[in-house]
Image (cartoon, rainbow, N blue to C red; front, top):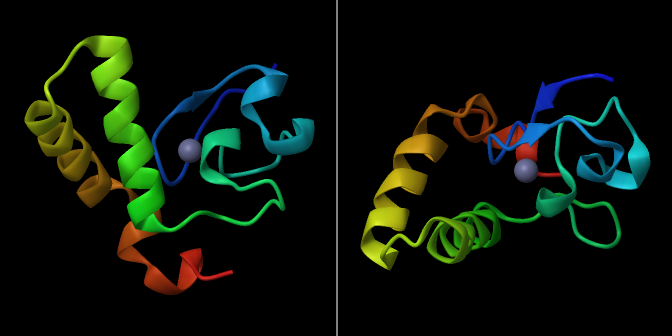
Length: 86
Ligand SMILES: [Zn+2]
């Protein structure tokens, strides 16, 4: 089973369900693509990452936002703006 990391939210991708349409060559996880297979905006992805940390990790919104912003700053996909405009 391939192991990858989503280029836009850093989610580990291990199971078929993590890959859009079970496509193991995808650089993005199912959370980061919409129903049409189009990459969501940075704001949408940021919002869902914050929500996930609040509900799953019990973080406050401020803590979650700080962690997500630090993470997004380090993800290469977001430092190459042209790479995320499909
Ligand atoms: Zn993702």
